[in-house]
Image 1 (tube, rainbow, N blue to C red):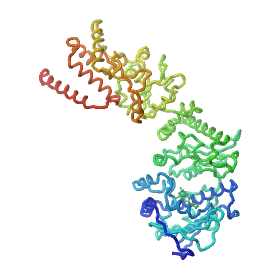
Image 2 (image 1 turned 30 degrees about the horizontal axis):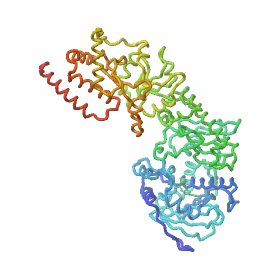
Image 3 (image 1 turned 45 degrees about the vertical axis):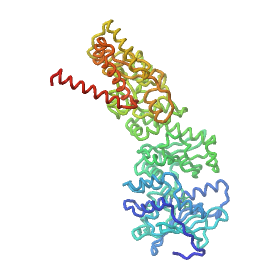
Image 4 (image 1 turned 90 degrees about the horizontal axis):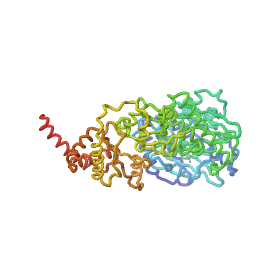
Length: 636
Ligand code: ADP
Ligand code: MG
């Protein structure tokens, strides 16, 4: 180790850093070259921050230094150095920034990394741990750094990446900025080859907005491609830029490149990724657009340029009309900023509308990946019309679970006197196909939107209406309104009509059933929505749907227990048999058992049966009895 003026002070890495280093050093499946991307990106960040301070009017040391990144190597000593003239670090900053992992998500990152087969290269930069990737190629790293702040001494950091690092004063005088000196491992000597370095820089860092000088030669493009006219940018350039921004290895699904001159000048280059960002789950803060003012980066990942429901979009926005010294804190209140933000939002939505219209397949791809987040836009009242036009659903008329329709298509297909848009929430298409509430809709040929995600019901309730039509859950639908509409299928071999005498008995049976169910129901009624099922539970028209109640319960919300209405299908064989029993013996135990069984079965279907024990017990008893009849009467 180098001799130092003052004895070096030893520090230990935090436990999670050690764990991370351990994985990095031992991972074989990783493309090692990404360490270069990470270090250059840190240098670029440091230069951006410096330029930002300078625009604010902060006094800097070494003000005359050019803003650049220099990469040099020493073939004899196997040392690679990456040097920048950025903001540098004070000693305290060195300890907090390099010795610990500050950002959230690092724990999850470690877990994912340990399990992941794809390697660290796609993800490391997203978790604020990029610096450590240098230990994939280094047996020893020395950082020499001097902060831009006045009167801060320079520091030297040294580590072999095993467990400790030490900090001392550097032997020589330093200028502002940071130098990373990498003593390459024997198996990483390729990184002192100029060609290898150059191609790696071009691959990952071509769009860095500061010159990268490799042995004094500039290797990157340093052009703001978002500022160039659309016609002069090739698809390859867009893709390359997108990959640089997003760390994605695939090309983008869509590119939105726009430029507006009046009333406010700004340009935007935005991308919709093919895949939704799975790291969102662990690092929900990892989104936003890069905001530039006159080509100077003001904020990386700004979260206010687009509403959260469009947070899957990656890209940059650049404006001539914002002041360069604007502070990140006051951005949100800036009128011009807000105008830019609403203009971009509206343009993104218009672009999505255009895709939906011109290229349905592409839109379906978009919806499958990003629909989940997009749906959360129901609060964007300014763009409500566009938002609604972009929603997609599966429906009872769709051929399979994958086909999607828009609300507009639904409305076009509505029945003559239909005034409401019907929806049903269920776990799957198969489950919904068996839902008794849907029987009347089937017989009338009325389309029902199928919602598989409880969030969908929230969205729909929040919207309230589409055009003039209210959304209505099939559980709450008024069968009298439906009954009036024309049927498409004739009622199946109509059961004989009840005589007026039997109708009276039936009414008494309903009263009996109500007595049996007691305060569990508000009423027991004859149903005119059922064809194949003997009974079902419905909500009052203005009441909450069962699914909504269930969700509120899960969220521990106190809700009044909603009284249920139990509907009985007079034409069903089981009910007719029950009526025969009832006519002969009104208090027969069998009536009580069947009533309770039907009611609990309906609760079970709804998902609101709290305790299945009674149901299963009763069912077993009934099966036992029926097995005896099977043997005795049917003589099997
Ligand atoms: P991230 O860049 O995502 O924050 P890194 O592990 O790459 O995570 O870097 C950690 C921190 O170390 C940076 O946020 C920065 O504060 C500091 N840092 C790293 N490299 C430099 C540099 N060249 N100049 C100034 N600060 C740096
Ligand atoms: Mg970094």
